[in-house]
Length: 452
Image 1 (cartoon, rainbow, N blue to C red):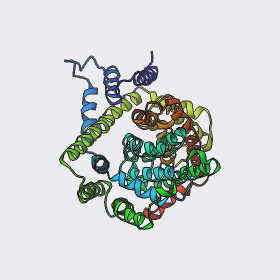
Image 2 (image 1 turned 120 degrees about the horizontal axis):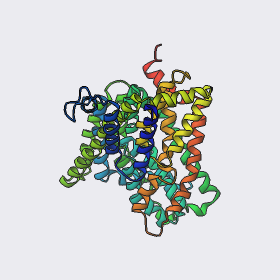
Image 3 (image 1 turned 180 degrees about the vertical axis):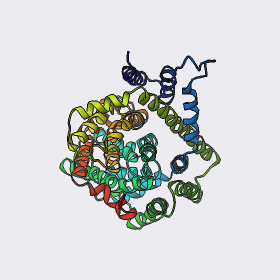
Image 4 (image 1 turned 45 degrees about the vertical axis):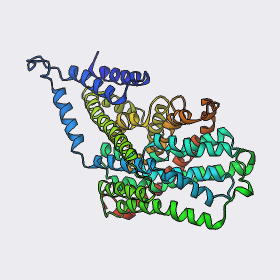
C-alpha cells in the first residue's frame, strides 16, 4: 500500500474505533502514535524503540497545548458554568423567565429555550445544559400537560445552543485550529446564535398557537401576582444577566482577553452563588472536579488530534482529499454545499469534537482556493454542528435527555420531537449564506475588517 492509502486506512480505522465506543482522545493518540511510528520509521537512526520522531512530535504537541494562551479560557469558562449549575441558579432563572412569559402560547417551552440560551452564555457544556434542563424544565412541562415529543424537542434543541452562543468551547477549539482570533469568532457568533434561538421560539409559539393541546396554557390560579414576577426577575434574572453581559461585553469591546474575562466570570459565579447562599463546600468540590475532568478531556483531544492530523498529513491524506475536491471543479457555492453536507452526514455517527478536530482542518486549506472567509466558514460549521447533537442515531442530546427522563419516554419519541429543529438549523444556514453580514458585520464593526 502507498502512504496516501495508509492515511485513508488510518482515517477509516479511527471512525470505526470511535463507533465501537472507544474514548476519542486516546483513540486519536493511539492512532497517531501507531501510524506515526510507521510513517517516521528510519532504521538507520533506530537504536532503541523510542528513537522515532513520532515520540518527539507527541511531546512537542503536548507542550504546545499546555502553553497555548487561548486554551486557558477553557477551564475558567467551564468552572463558571459548573458553579452556576451546581449552585441551582438556573432553577431561579427558569422560574423567573417562566413567569415573565406566562401570557405567550407555549410559555413554559419559551421559558425553557430562553433559559437554555442564557445558560449557554454561562457555559459551553452541552451535556450539562440538556441534563439540567431535562431535570428542571422537562418534568415541569410534562406535569403541565405538554406533549412529551414537543417538550423533548425543546429541551434537546435549546440545550445545544451552547455550541454556537459565546462563550462556546467549540469556538475556542476552532479558533486554535484555524488560527483565528477568538474575539472575532465570539462577535461573529452573536447574531447567528440569537437568530437561531429566536427561530426556535417562533416555532414553539406558532405550534402552540395552531395546536394548543401540545402546550396547555397555565391555569388562572397558577398565575402569580405582578409584584412576585417583578421580584423574581430582579433577584434571579438580572444578577446572572449582568454577570454574563459583563463577561461577553469585556471580550467583545476588547477590554479583556477571553481568558481574563473568563477569570472574572468564574469569580462572579462564585460571588453570585455565595449571595444566593447556595455555595457549599461539596458543590464547590464538584465544580472543581468536573472542571478538571472536562478540561483534561479537551486538552488531550488537542494533543491527540494534532498528532493524528500531523501523521495523516505527512502520509498524504490531506492531499488526496484536496485533490479530489479540486478535481470536481466546484464553484464557491458548490464547495460550501459539499463541505457542509459532509459535516452534516458526519454528525450522524460522530460528535462535534471529532468533526471539528479531525475533519474541519481538511477543508481549511481549501478556503483560500474557493475565496471563503474562514470566519464565515466557522459560523456555518458552528450552526451545522448543532445537528451532530440532534441527528440520529447518535443524537447525544437525545441520550442525555433520555438518561434523566421518566421511563415511559421512548428514545424514538425524543428523536421525533427533535426533527423540526434540524430543519430550522438548515434554514438559518441558508439565511446566513445569503446574508453573510449576519455573521461578519459585528466583528468588522468592533475590530475592523481583516486587512482593512
